[in-house]
Amino acid sequence: MASPGTADPRKPTDDSNSGNSVSLLPILIAGVSLLACVITGYLSHTSENRALELSFLLLQTIVVSIVIWQACDPFADAAHYIGHILKLPGSVRGATLDAIASSMPELFAGIFFVVLAVAGASADDVPVSDGEGFKSTIATCAGSAVYNMILIPAICAIFISFYRKERPTIDVESSVITRDGAWFVAMEILLIGFLVQNRIHWWMGVVFLLSYLVYVIILYLDARRFQARMKMVEEAMESGITASEAMEEVRQRGITLSRDLEGRFDGEQSDEDDDEEPETAGVLFALFEVRLSLYSAWTIILFSTLVAAAACYQLVRLTEATAETLGVDIFFVAVILAAAASSVPDTFLSIGSARKGDDDGAVSNAFGSNIFDISICVSIPLLVASYLNGWQPIEMGQSGDIVGLQIMLAVLTLVTLGTIWHKRQLTRGKAFFLCGMYAIFIAYAVLGSWGVFGSGN
Image (cartoon, rainbow, N blue to C red; front, side, top):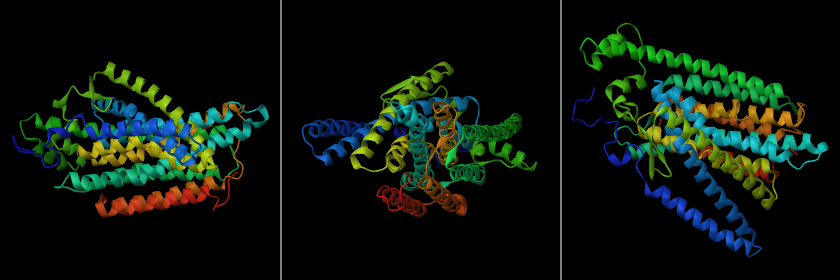
């Protein structure tokens, strides 16, 4: 246990790095992006320059992604507060509350892809339009999953290697890899099994919903074990011994304590210290702070959800417009553009967790977001599409591009898990290796949009 007046090696000592401190860099980026968007918008409407039109669409996407980020940021703060009240371990909170907070864009984008694809279509065209919309949904979720699985841990590792000199690696508990990573691989295999068919049925969405329910039950049991062990340490401390002595006494009973739990008592994770209640949620680049209570937390979650939904509607429209301007299949544009824009909240949420010393939360958020993307962000749009199609099977046509994408995702997932499993940590070198894998994925998507692998239409 850190002695009074001694700086904890894992706790940021700079006050500017704690809490919801205002950073001028994101505000500057947002301002420049908005100004550039207005200028290119004016120029593109006064000329027929295709490059200007594409630049305008790209800048609009950047602005929309910033809006999504700022909608999900207070959502994440509110969800984190609720997780703190419930005494959830960092890995469970990251895989549930944080994952839901950061995966809202994929859910809304998937629903809008399906609904807008059917809107305006004739009765005879609804099955085909349904299939095209659902393919874009899968493309967004798959692209986001690759981004989350590969790029987010890599970005966190690179950031931490410079920010946290005393421990410049992302250290991960084995349970995070074996539980969350293995579950995501299982969901991927299940999805591939469904997609090899040319028809997708509504009951497949129900299977994914039930699988997510099982996953949540597993997390609930893990949380209960965590809380029981925390109570053991607290009861041992009632005799007047220190936290370190109490933890050692519990270990002597043959009970293993996770690094996350140890951090609760030795002050390693300042964001989860009970003495820091009440917390606040930063709104609009943390320029404003809202004092958190259960009432205000749920109000923030509701309002943030509405803002994120509106932004995702515009994101879907921009993805369609970009595909039309480039003259390529919207499937591959969604893989890159919509996926990256909707994954911005995941990136900043994981960096924030890593900066506070919660390495498990940073990585489990990426895994949990992917599980949520496959189980919820695919299943709910599937049920919506099935409803719009009279509960008839959704015609996917020749779905070779989708299956190929999912197989690549599964392979990249296994490589990433192996990389993280080695010594249970991510170094700067491993992070650059992961960035290289993401570059390969982007090259695959670009070549696919040019028809190199054949068309799925």
